[in-house]
Image 1 (cartoon, rainbow, N blue to C red):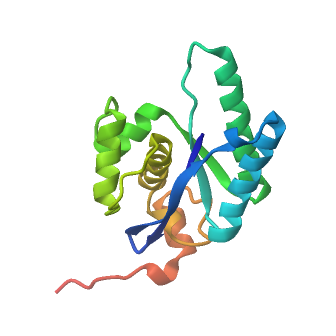
Image 2 (image 1 turned 120 degrees about the vertical axis):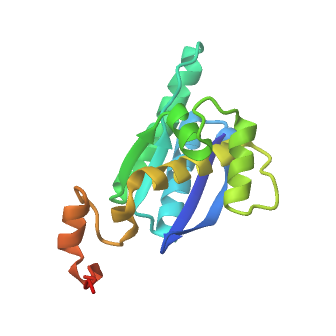
Length: 176
């Protein structure tokens, strides 16, 4: 199962556009599952035209086969983003939890409750994969800084670059 979430930021206001889970387990062939992931991520990119893709870094488990499958699935999602010219950023699970709840050791329930509150979601998702994806999106928003909020302002190196690229947004207050 793969969670996904798309959020929009308009003048510092966050809104949830779509989130859910993809269940490629329905396909029997491993490569068909990967194709389904690629097509779903590509479809979301075409539909919403995001600036970035954020993904959760894989955690190390004991089952090597599970890690291999997860790595392939994440690689396909990243390839889809890169195919569409998006920047890709990866966050550790601890960083995501810290960004959303203020506690890097928060449980999935605590993260979900915080997201339900922030985005005023009325129905609790049936799978944590969906809320995990939304948490990664929110984390990316928090980590990106204000320069990411301005369309077309990619690759800024701080406020100085932002001000140079957006002189119309600078106002000078005169002292009395």
